[in-house]
Image 1 (tube, rainbow, N blue to C red):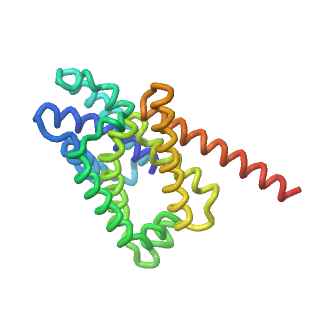
Image 2: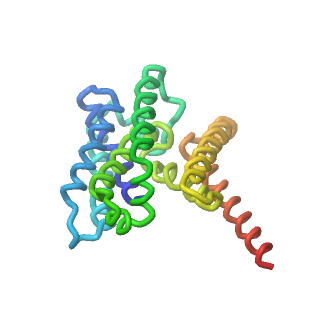
Length: 236
């Protein structure tokens, strides 16, 4: 679903533009666009059309629409780079209750549907044969990603949002022996990447989004090389 994450990320720009034009809170515009995108992708689902091709179509369309819209909303132009690459330090105190609520809702949904989500992720065919509703689980997963985009936009921006979602999971996959371990490792590595990224951003005077993603990419490289060397040593 990394393609879906990128599509959702690019759709946030359109949400930002709409919110700015209507003088609405940015998180509300992003959330509305994310939910709308889930509905559009659901309606476009067709076995004759490859999912990755549909996602590429939606991703490019949303990115271009968002940038075009922002160009015609003067108040948003000065902050365009922060929407593209993120600025975690721009989060205000009034945003925190909203973000806390989104995190709480996401955790509750994930806890409630943890087992069927794991079954569906490992092998959809077996999950369906065991009575798991594939369409329902797919919709839940897309809605969780939609909630994620509302939070991630301020941290790393629209263009780098997919990296924030995928890199910790890739790193965790190299270290974990079970789905629960993978979640724990992904959480720890994501927190470490954000913390080191913020410190590096302040020390080097660079964008917080770029710094966070580069730190996460560096951690993946270190873990990958370490695991490769460990496996070669054990094989010898």
